[in-house]
Length: 357
Ligand code: ADP
Ligand code: MG
Image (cartoon, rainbow, N blue to C red; front, side, top):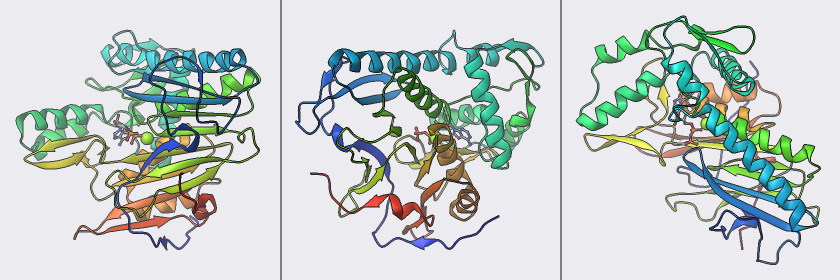
């Protein structure tokens, strides 16, 4: 594994969230295609809608509103279709069909779901079990712990761990999937958003779009450059206001995703626990408040942000350094509460010092 030196960044650090894009400082409240009224980009159109339990923001450059509408509506349909197929909560989704099937039962799923489950299995291998879509029974345990306001017992965690492991997902011919153990279930929450973003971009490219941004819940892909030839600027937001100014990234044809423990968490006995769970110990991730990943696709960026949160700064950075075209910024919280930020060697090439105006 190719090791590089971590670089301690100069700014004081705390949890980060990839947030709004430069062109999107004003969010449209409706779901209609409309021209962004700030005069920055003529021919710039955007759309906003809710999906996968979060907000989606789409931006395209096009010659006419009709052309933009064509791109944006197709992208939205693509995203909503994937959300429908892969939702843990939708009773009609592929995932519900799989989760409700008995052990050893073959379930035919859509080609897309098959593709995502298969990628998720690859990330399970790559991360030695840190990324694991079968972690779901642990989510139930920690939810219950929150309800009871009491930490789960070691034995309860051990029982559940026996039912976990993406090695127990079998991929069969003709898009059929089989879960080997009774009580297993899948949750694609750490990877489906990324897949949906990539598919939305592919769909718009097919229709002729050359310049676009798709952001779902802070994970995003930018296609090409903006109409004026400049790269897209992505703002890395500081949710607790600890930065002197926002960190900006300048990107083209790239994905950026962030995982953090500050937006969603469990509260038990007045303590906060991350919604990202280490499937090997059964316990929520500690001491990694934020991970930002830059990667060729949103699927990789999304899954790796979650995986690196589990792996921690040292092992996580080793993994990132071994992957071509992937960069990362990882925040670690020390035992005395100090936040240290590490970034991979080429992460700074994406950083720009300008502030949002
Ligand atoms: P967010 O963007 O909401 O912070 P992340 O991309 O960080 O989400 O992914 C967190 C989600 O991934 C969780 O809500 C859960 O659905 C899922 N998840 C949690 N732990 C794991 C894990 N160890 N492996 C795979 N998926 C996980
Ligand atoms: Mg993720």
